[in-house]
Length: 260
Length: 108
Image (cartoon, rainbow over all chains, first blue to last red; front, side, top):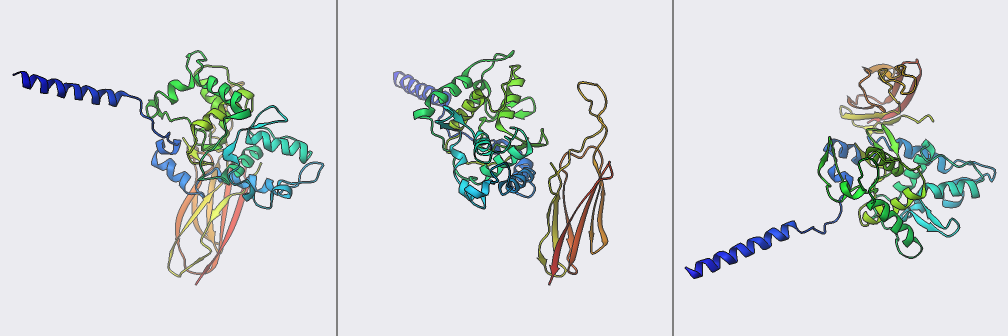
């Protein structure tokens, strides 16, 4: 009698242990938004022809060798005829820049080149040229892991991005974590919540019916929780971009991706 | 900014072979049912209403599009390779503006 109760206890204890183990948070690699997408959307992205984002990549490709500005230069004059010199570069962005004393995203870098070296007009963040150029540059590093530096000079900006990510805001009083850390894979109305990584941006979003930047997506997220969105290219969003890319470390760059 | 239409036709094919043709064009495809949020007025319809593909001047396919087609329409269809020639693609929108593209194919 005593023996059986001991066994029972052991079994119960073991069962409890399994239960605890199941509840403990698992350290799993984060998934790309591609893995949550429906097969039709995935198929659109898999074929570079049916991926409409490549219409903007074509624009970027044209702009690459187009001479512009008073200096009479094009991207190709410094960086080589095709974009292959950009291979692997974009996966390290945003990076700390000594002159600006803050982070620079790809778009900032493009505009810096345009205004300082080419003496041309800066492009608007969400213009076809800027999106095209950003997509063209990011495409060079496709299928390479995201790899940003968050130590050294970038550390304070990383901390600021982390704080932004974890701060409650807006009428719904929600932080990024409340969806993208606590509930990935769960439906939010008709959409599936993802880990919220920026590895596919600029992305062709079917809802937008065009290509858009990561910062545009941030604005959408902020509006959804009824918070006042920041401007595209603002320091807040660039810091957040760094934190997101830190989360996405090791995840493959897919830009330009297709998302719903 | 005008974006060029994208067309994919195999450069060469065997006689009698079934080939796939893919096209993609950038167009906003304004449905005509949306309202301008500020003025409350309807935004006039502006869609690509006709797409046609011809081979050596002979019509191969003609499609009539309606407002439910999403922006940047994509077409993929099949044709049988019989002889060498040129495919001509024409998109016409509500303003009567046409965009065309052509692609050559040799049949061995």
